[in-house]
Length: 347
Ligand code: GZL
Image 1: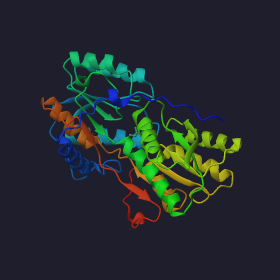
Image 2 (image 1 turned 60 degrees about the vertical axis):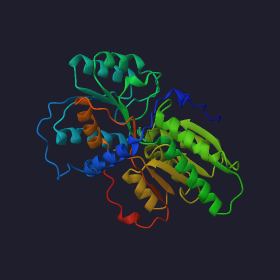
Image 3 (image 1 turned 30 degrees about the horizontal axis):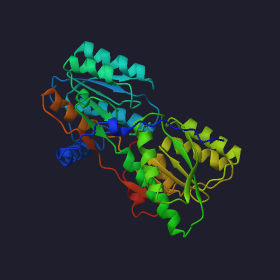
Image 4 (image 1 turned 135 degrees about the horizontal axis):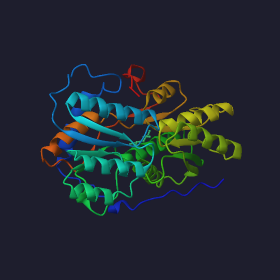
């Protein structure tokens, strides 16, 4: 079985525009995120809905491919209600062309602000140019875009995919170093959606760490599109092909949970016979960590709804916002103190 080559995009074209306000931006988002922390597990009792802000926000969501995505959607919808923002919410069912159509409909409707989760990083310049011509500010959320023109969007709020990938690499390097193993460490990578910023970023960060440790190698990598079913299918075919491996790096929990099922069917004890590291930190992955079936879970926070509403109000008021806002994220590892006391994840 040949590991499939993955699409990469020279991020030099990606405008991040880190500015000193980033810390302020992080604070702003952390504060707003705190307000939303209960949002996925149920309406945040503390807040009643604001007066109608008079703001109309068009939001294009990717779809419903994972528990993470569904929580992200709930966070946006509940935060809009609580903030008194009128939300036009469009689910693209995993198709970029549906997102482009949705953004065009938001422009025609003359919303005050557009926010969207770009399913892939490329291909947005034309429709964002139409939004710019219409004078509608655009907020990119969760996943990043690549563009030659930084004026096409006001700012980005979401997670730091490269750092998530680096944390995955650091965990495996430390785990195998701790075990005094200098023998080769063979890794199967369950890759996210081809061309998406989280997949490319996680892969890049992971490889950056491994580059200093030549005993580690990725013996197979294939896109499972962040889907549970594809994680199972890929692992099933890897096991049936006889590829030997010591660790699995999954770009999200959905795929790793499918892969665990395939490993157990083959009599493999995940977390013991094979080291498992995954990203998102949905409840099922935390439960697997507690059960010893996963060794490390890296948080990717979906609860950005309150921060998005705060930024939408600022954009509607004509304010500038920080260019790049990464939300704070944690790493949960085997043996951590307090794993059993973690609050319900809400996704
Ligand atoms: C990451 C997000 C990814 C999650 C997946 O920021 O875009 O998409 O890791 C989700 O679970 O499908």
